[in-house]
Length: 311
Image 1 (cartoon, rainbow, N blue to C red):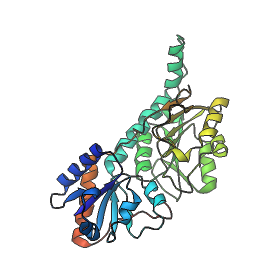
Image 2 (cartoon, rainbow, N blue to C red):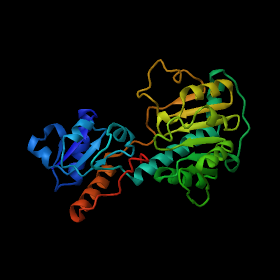
Image 3 (tube, rainbow, N blue to C red):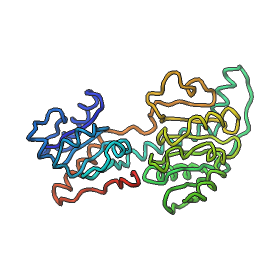
């Protein structure tokens, strides 16, 4: 018996339970609300998607939970000191999807699409100078599973790529930086900055006025990570001043983005509805099933999140 614990809508929850059940025919997957009190006492595993922490605490025998999403920062923040391990989704399909989005929107900015859209609205015909990909410096914040695949895709398309991470990394074809000094160096040489960092206490508002100001004049930003990593006021200030030329934003402090938010009407901002790398229930369910089966056979919990680091 494995409960599916979530605060997502009933229709989406049904999709997940059906896919998980198909991937694990030997397991019984039920919504948390369908469990009896006796069943709640016995569950050692839970599968979760934005779970209510009170529901998890109502499972006293819980040893670990498996998220069907890559991001688990909200769960960590809401659980003061969990007695169980938290396993996040690591899906190669997700990394491939994210790298596709990173490349697509990098090309959007690289080929001056915002400027051409503005020219069209003004009825203004004017070819702009073209920059070769090798002369466009891309800075990538975050070199985990998603970042490494995205970095390689950018390299394969001829861009000059550098990356920054909390700990030192070595990636062929990518200039890698780490630490505070490394962050400043990366920012100062990035014509286009792509953020794929996890949200932690260290990365919240990491892209503040000071750090964003290190970017060269005319640089652009893509944020496909979490909204709280970017200081909205600072970003708007630098866009209005012309220090930054454009921002492609897929994640926000509040989602859906409130209709009164200045991002909606800002000519230098592209707003996306959190679609850069949606989780695929089929591939995600197969990964969860494989981890659950391994646990049943070996009693070994998959690699879990470090609550102190947040990922």
